[in-house]
Image 1 (tube, rainbow, N blue to C red):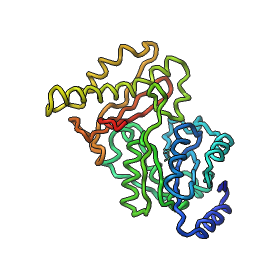
Image 2: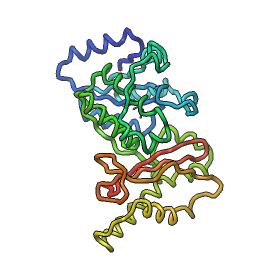
Image 3: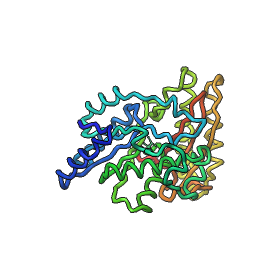
Image 4: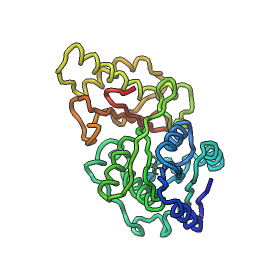
Amino acid sequence: MLIVEHPGHRPLYHHIVDELPGTRVVLVPTMGNLHTGHLTLIRNAKALGDMVVVSIFVNPTQFGPTEDFDRYPRTREADLVLCREADVDVVWLPSVAMMYPEGLEPDQQFAVIPPRALTQDWCGAHRPGHFAGVGLIVAKLFQQIRPHVAVFGEKDAQQLALIRRLVRDFDFPIEIVAHPTVREADGLALSSRNQYLVSAEERQAALALSQVMTTVQRLYAILQTTRPGQAVAVEWAFEQAMARCSPSWPCTVPIAWDYQGAVDNTSFERQTYLSPGSRLLVAARIGSVRLIDTMALISDA
Ligand code: PAF
């Protein structure tokens, strides 16, 4: 396994790739603290090409001033062990100085300005500047690693939509593959931030995200059978789901919802009424952690 962590390693990597013409390079970009979700994604990435590159970089420009950049878990040695076990070919481990040689001040950088239409709502509305940071770092990783395929988790649905647009608008010759969300048996989506859930009650409260969406899915399926053709308002469906689920949530832990809603799965436009192509989106703060989750309205599971 080649570890690229100094500027001097980059020519070596490019030499290897250049020496292997026809090699299909698959990039799995991460911020480290690898868990089963990442490992499932890495295992599937191996089937998409010949050489898997995992990048590990906690990107400062995508964290707001009040967000968890400093406490974001950095577990370099454990991540390297997991990458080795998963038979990763290259780990891309740049430093902040390698990624941002002129420092982090915005007036020292070229910027990637994401389309407002894609970022003004949902997480974009709650995390100003976040998607500009993601767009910038992903564009840099694409240039450095020159993958043929890049795999992103479906859980970060708005990020995925943004990256698909980045690739299209900047003509990156890269295929973007969405990897389905990996969940615990009880439905909690795997995320590095789950470790901030400090008590059993917070862990139980976190199930609210998946529960409310599976309840909307069930409600929609029932209405499709009992009242076919009837329009189902997104807001009403979530109200009904909340009324059904919330009695089972622990009363000791408040769940502060940032949003609940639906977008068209292809265009990512906000929807007022559910449709077979809807994607449900939720985000909530539980204790000190902000969690997000998403499901297609009609689950393909
Ligand atoms: O989803 C993530 O882990 C990050 O946003 C990414 C894509 C690695 C960019 O820093």
